[in-house]
Amino acid sequence: MEDLPITLSRCNVFTNGELDTERPIPVVPKSHDGVLNEKQLVDYKDRRVRFLSWLLKVGKHPEKAEGYSPYTVYSTAYRTARFDLWLWEQKNEYTYPPQSDDAAAYMDWLAFSDQSQVMKGKAQEGLQHLSKWLHHEYGYDEWEFEYTFDGSGGNHQPQDFLTREERRAIRQAALNEGNIPAYDSLTAEERNGWKLYISNALGKPYDEVTREDWNEVNGWEITSLVWTSLDAGLRPNEVRNARTEWVDTRNGVLRIPKDESSKNEGNWTVSLTERTATALSRWLDEREQYKRYEDTDTLWLTSHGNPHGSSSLRRLLHRLCDQAGIETANRKMSWYTIRHSVGTYMTKERDLAAAKAQLRHKNPMTTMKYDQVPVEDRRNALDRMG
Image 1 (cartoon, one colour):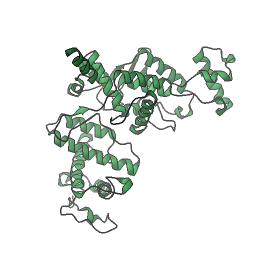
Image 2 (tube, one colour):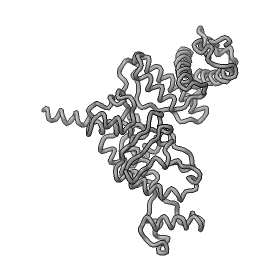
Image 3 (tube, helix red, strand yellow):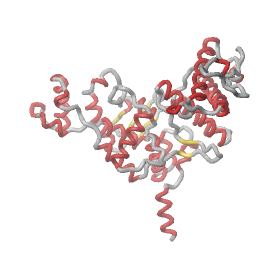
Image 4 (tube, helix red, strand yellow):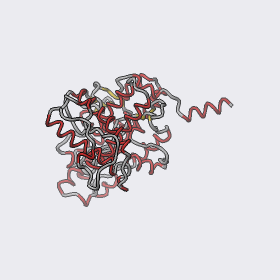
């Protein structure tokens, strides 16, 4: 291994002079010595120079071309390098850039490590900087974490969750989402396929289906996605990875196999309500009519034929909140908000064991964060206390 701490200004990454800093910012720290071969080191160093120089020049506010301070970038360099090394040890191979699954696994590992809450919070902050760069430079979805660490020393807690009333409102809003293709937008061949689908959906003979019947049938794609997430607390990665073979509508469950689950921690059988099982059954029938699903067993895709990511799911949730009249200001509303509502109320209605199974937690300590009384129940208790 060659010289390891490298000052960014010596890497010719600046076009308007050199950075005046007393301490070198480590592109490849000494902890990585002997870990990478020559080709891997060249690749890793190149990516790291791009990442760290981006932070220095524009990372804080890209729209204003305002960067972070050298001290912040120095700290981020070490924290993200520790994450990289941890990831290679877990996978027993070099890989870069990391993916959202990798970041989530690291956060889970940190949660139950002996590091202080401050250290955990700073490590999460470093990964957020890395995610920000990957999003702006490569179009990656920004990473979302199941819980956050309080860098000031508090405990890690799940982020915001939906109340019971909000869950019902989101479920209703999702029921109103989605239309099948308009009659006039279809070719004759496509129209025949949809005519058969409408015939089955309405329980009407094929030959009796008319143009007007197109207005009587709604699409089930978004409804099934949202309702399944409300039941199963699907992580964004699980929405993306979901396959048609996961669905068992006869028994009202999802069967998530080990090699496709978000965290690769085992085979899970997840309960669904009858309403959700019906929505999924309808969606599987409807799904056969869309060309974008012809060569894939992916359960849900965006309208552009891409797998859903954190950003598209966040936009969907905010749209449903707007339709349902749910205020999102001053709340961290991501797809995990749905998952946290499942954990919170499953724990309240049953117990931690039921929440652990439904949310697919390997470590029971992960589920413990849901062992808290919702704010509305605390308010009711205060009313009763007088």
